[in-house]
Amino acid sequence: AQKVTQAQTEISVVEKEDVTLDCVYETRDTTYYLFWYKQPPSGELVFLIRRNSFDEQNEISGRYSWNFQKSTSSFNFTITASQVVDSAVYFCALVITQGGSEKLVFGKGMKLTVNP
Amino acid sequence: DTGVSQDPRHKITKRGQNVTFRCDPISEHNRLYWYRQTLGQGPEFLTYFQNEAQLEKSRLLSDRFSAERPKGSFSTLEIQRTEQGDSAMYLCASSPPRDAYGYTFGSGTRLTVV
Image (cartoon, rainbow over all chains, first blue to last red; front, side, top):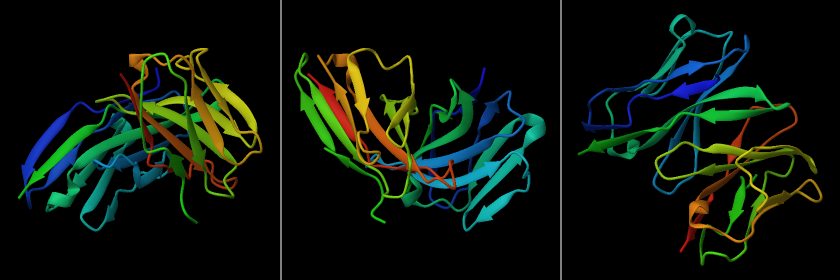
């Protein structure tokens, strides 16, 4: 199966706490792409990061960081010093090739609530 | 670049009625995707166009659903004889020729069937 598992469904933290969102993926492709998206209450999917399977370097962007480990098939996302504006549903996704075309397969999402 | 536009943002319809949604992708994007997102779930792939050709349809897309992209620009998704189970957010995404994975998503159309 080619799928993404986000085991946590909901997390609530207090502002300024660090929080890590877990993502585990399964794929039979040797080359693949992983994504993280943020979905605020308004509904649009906001792109956060894309990572291909050749690049295992961790990435940091401001308060956001990502840890990609092929050995454990994980692509975890950490928010440092969380803020109320980080409250949203976060999705991890994988591009799969199936049925002759490529499409995104999403996890079920993790709802993050940051309380003041 | 105005992003991917979807219209309407919200639609409430009675069971059995037909509804049509529109997606306007970014102008130079040749690939267009429709996804459906039900409450508490991640988006699920429905269908994919490359230019005007519909290259794949998910098994989720029953025969009550039809999608078109007649001139390779905007796309429409029609649902006939709506059912309560069709209530969901319908998301459109597009990507450009030189970056197939450079997806941009629209804000979605939230459908409620009563």
